[in-house]
Image (cartoon, rainbow, N blue to C red; front, side):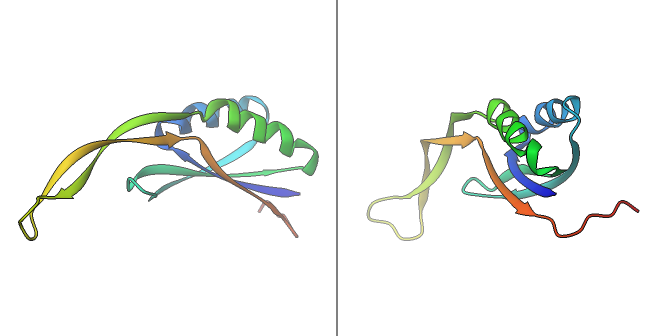
Amino acid sequence: MKLIIAVVQDEDAQKLISTLMNEGFGVTKLATTGGFLRAGNTTLLIGTEKERVPLALSLIEKVCKSRKQIATSPSPVAGTTGVYVPYPIEVTVGGATVFVLDVEEFKKI
């Protein structure tokens, strides 16, 4: 038995959950926050048999594509102390961070 932990961007979460469930995977959704942009993301817990891990990973990769997004980053104003002006920067968001763990014991109570 394996446990897949997938951290995905909020906007990819619902489509990924639907895709995984249509393929017979059980999914537990956790709302989480973190990363460079401090934006909301979703952590999915997926328990599955070892043989089905490649299918789950391919579905995650298919749904969670990386994309560019404009974010603002503070920049100090020259000659002043403590004054920052936001300026736009392009960052890559999306994709998924995935961990696959061995499960020693599984019980559904």
